[in-house]
Length: 174
Image (cartoon, rainbow, N blue to C red; front, side):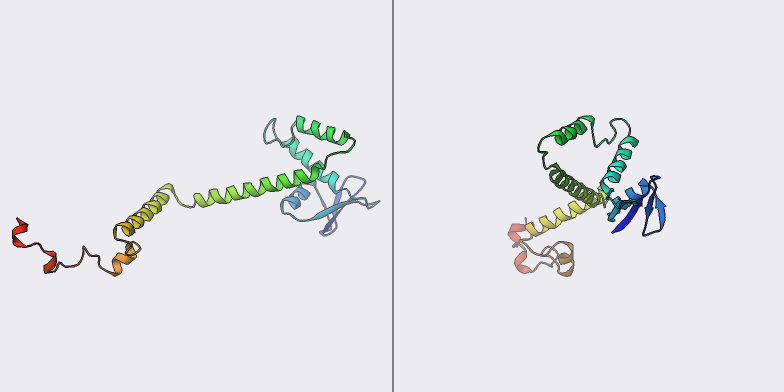
């Protein structure tokens, strides 16, 4: 786990890369799912939660009024009321589980959308039409062949030359 030290002058120092970092750098680590711990350089106290909350506050302030705001005033007021309860609710577990589920669903939707859009609408219509054609060829041919490939390898009954039993007698041709 990467260790970040916070000094009295509020500077953050990445001990792995031997350089000072910003909150934006730490945000990038979070997005890259790279584990880190922020500790006070003097006391060794774990400051990770405080730094993560600071990153969230900065992100909330960067958003315009009502624009992708995660924490509304009402939600923040409810959090304060939960902390004031004699026995606070075990909210962290519910929030973690709900957020994880929401992110998984978002990922699935993005995957499904990109899969649906891999072809142009005309390409999708062509694929559907070919599938329908194969279905009807199988249904009408009594299950013979699987579409184009089967019809090319073997001539169908319609392509075969008629033999004498297929031709009607002379009196029925008129």
